[in-house]
Image 1 (cartoon, rainbow, N blue to C red):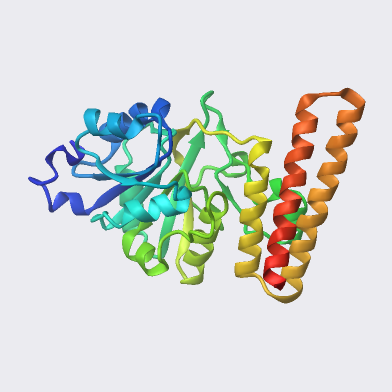
Image 2 (cartoon, rainbow, N blue to C red):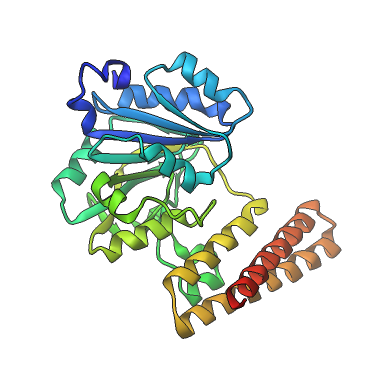
Length: 306
C-alpha cells in the first residue's frame, strides 16, 4: 500500500501526502507508520523529516519502512521547520500534518472526501483521544486578553460539541491537520518563528484571513499519546508572545502582552506560596518554569522595543 507502489501509481500518489516530523521518537514511530499503512487511502505518499535525532530512529525507519520518503536535517528545525522541510517533498493535492506520537484508528478516506467536497474550507481536524480513549481538546478560539488571562479559555472541550457532522472552529491542533496543499503553499507553510507551540494557531489564523474556514469533524477519531507538562510553559508563552506581536496591534497588543506578563508573575507567586506551605517539588518546578516564561517575555519585549 502507501508508497511501496508509488512509482507504479504516480497518478494516485498525487491525492494525499502525509507529513511527519521526528525527533527521537523511536518509541512511537512504528505504531504511527503502521497505522498510516493501514488506514490512509491507497496511493498515499508519506514524507518524514528527521530533526537530527540521535536515538537511531531515522535508520530504523529507513530499514523497516522503505516506502517512507525520509528527509534528514543536520539540525533540529523544530516542529514548524520540520514540517516545512518535509512538505517541500510533497506531491499530494492535500497534506496531512500528523504527529509521530499519534495513531490513526480508522480509515481517513471520509475525512479527505469531506474536505474535497466542501470548497469553503481550507483545513480541518478530527476528534483526538488519549491513551485511555478519552476525548481531549484539540480545537480552540483565537487569543484575546480575556482568554490569555486563563489559557484554558483558548481551548474548546470536546463535550461542548453535539452530534453535527462538522463545526466551524478558529483553530485546530497541529497533531492532525488536513489542509489543501495549494493553500499551504500560498501561506508559505508554518511560520518558523514558532519553534514549538502556537504555530498551528497562527496557521489557522492565516487560513481564515484568506476567507477559507477551519473545521472539526467529531465523529472520526485518532489517538495522540503526547501530553503537556509545566516545563513546556516557557515555550508556550514564547509562542503566544510571537502570535500577539504578529496578529495584534495597538491597545489589543498592549493588553495581551500585559496579561501575559502579569499572568507569569502571579503564577510564580502562587506556586512559590504552595511550595512554602506543602514543600512539594512539583510546585517549586512550576514556579521555576513560570519564572523562565517571564524572562522569555521580557526579553522579547526588550528586543521589540530595541
